[in-house]
Image (cartoon, rainbow, N blue to C red; front, side, top):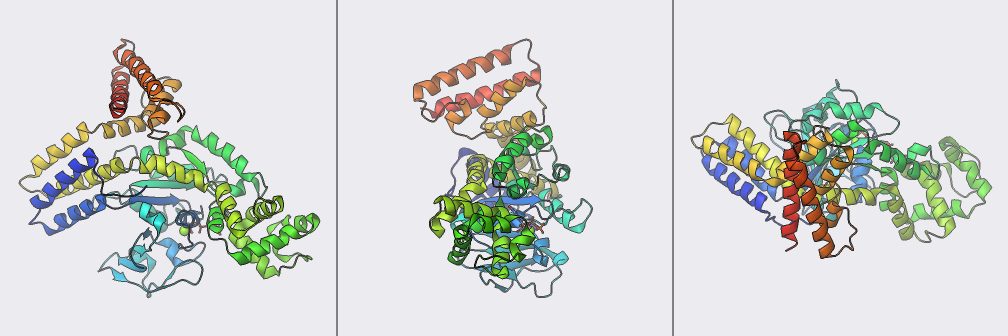
Length: 495
Ligand SMILES: Nc1nc2c(ncn2[C@@H]2O[C@H](COP(=O)(O)OP(=O)(O)OP(=O)(O)O)[C@@H](O)[C@H]2O)c(=O)[nH]1
Ligand SMILES: [Mg+2]
């Protein structure tokens, strides 16, 4: 997921068009500045926003993805502000008020999350906070923490909604979105649906992934919680509502991932003390969160130490860590850290981000940039506007990548009337499960070139017949042609 200055033909033509537009707007400073920002953005890491209901575990997951505890969790006024975490050469926090100039603000960090001093500014008067933090994870993607959606009518919800579905003066600040939902809250999907729209300008399934968050709570702390969460996520994956919203659903226990990634030696020692105790003594603590902290126990940990463990790992995390130490699967703090992260679902989430977002990075960026240009052209008339607009339209129409995205979204919205098995194959060929050729063809990575060629030839033949069949509607025939073109592109790429 490294971010070299990209040279995909699509991105190159978008960059060229933006440069022309920037010149055309030389005498309109506002528009020019906006276009320059769009140009700069083409070379930035992908921007991924994390959204969901209040307390869905957004900030915790962000920390897990960074591998450091940065975003404050639980209470605190900063959880009500849209906060960007981006890679930087130095540690810096910038406050952008709704009115007035951005200014640097002081912050402290004593082991835990960053505590920002807003200097008395009301969170309601803050547009966003930008945290620059040297981090290899943030070099791969900028992460944006958004305030929880409490209900669709509250201020905080309004801010997140405005961020994800901006009005005319602002264009999709995020390239991709992670939607968090908890299993216990069936209403989560409805909430998330509310700021989803089928228009091209909104979050669409192509740039969104759903996370079944706080997955360890699914089994109320039971040790097989993650297996249950997997089953539930698989069910959600086939739910038409979710399919319209996101590419796939991944269960993640963010707390486990965050604390696993930042495990301290003293925490390992405390967990090890429980693992060394008799099973009866340990089980007596595991009965409930209250007992875990307050029960009398021969295990040499004070209630305060136990409370700390509970805060950091949750009951499930503590049970899992103790089981892993006992089994000999985590003989050191480093080994335990690796195991906890592995079992949290974070690794799978990273893989999905890599295949869904990173591989599509250029397309998502080109899409964001063209949307921004479209909005500038709409608002500011200049003599060459018509020419720029028609070039924009030409790029949009000619880019097969956009046709693929439109078709994927239409398939997700059940807008193309084909059999479920056909829809599945189309999605796969379009790269819904990952862009690698063998993934698209449903082959194993070991498949050799001749096998890949044969499979591509078969797919092209099959979809050609579908495109030409008198039984196919116009819409299905068009969709089949998009798939054929994707396959032909893959064939060319084989050399
Ligand atoms: N058991 C468990 N608890 C979690 C998990 N993720 C978060 N939590 C807890 O849930 C609470 C809320 O977590 P946050 O990460 O602050 O959630 P948020 O969505 O950012 O919350 P707001 O920004 O206030 O909407 C905290 O007490 C976390 O410790 C998880 O994966 N498992
Ligand atoms: Mg938060």
